[in-house]
Image 1 (cartoon, rainbow, N blue to C red):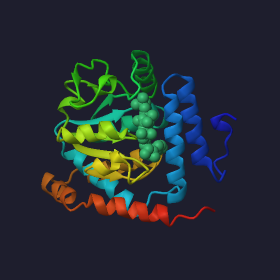
Image 2: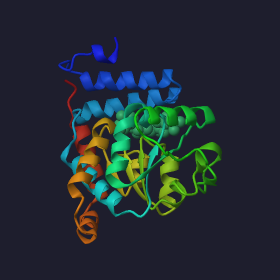
Image 3: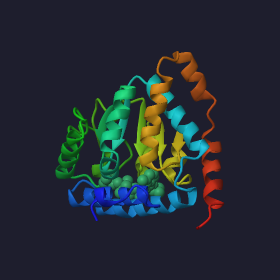
Length: 249
Ligand code: PTJ
């Protein structure tokens, strides 16, 4: 079935659309085959969370928006899953916050980087970073350490969705404020985040954009105050509680 053949009234509409996007991503050489497994894991958590943005995730999305608006050099990191699932939406978030977009892959090949850059361009996103890869994240082996010197390497705030734990931890070690989108509240990425957003990326990215648009115009002092009152551990605990009490209807 093609994406446009799925009726919006289908009870699992969002999930089916997501699967199609990931499948297309693999066919186009954008998403890695491991990305399919990662998506399956995410879906299981999403199912238990009720396929909805829970209040603690909404609050985290708003705080993430505040951090992005306050940042000097914010960067949105894009991997093969992110590019397949939210290519246009990530561009809208960059526009709303003034953030740069950098392709940063776990399974890095030049061919995949170029395909992802082309795919993003087809969705109106230009000027992406990650092609130069002239710096390295300290403490990480080989390909996945490669970043741009004027991108992730020097960023003060980085959004890292659907991230592998090692790299998320290494970025946190570099002292970066890390905003993580991950449906597993106890993944190493979520645990190392300044702001863990436990939500499906399909919902989370447009939600951060909406919050950024609504917060635009607030003073830096107001935004800072908002960031400082956020309790990351409380957000992880609230999500874990929701998942553990989720039913299997
Ligand atoms: O494109 P590459 O080469 O950089 O590879 C990307 C993957 C995703 C394969 C790589 O980063 C990886 O293996 O990630 P992990 O370790 O499987 O972690 C992915 C995390 O994202 C898991 O905790 C999943 O539960 C979560 N996740 C998966 N799909 C979604 C999600 N979280 C939010 N929204 C989703 N749609």
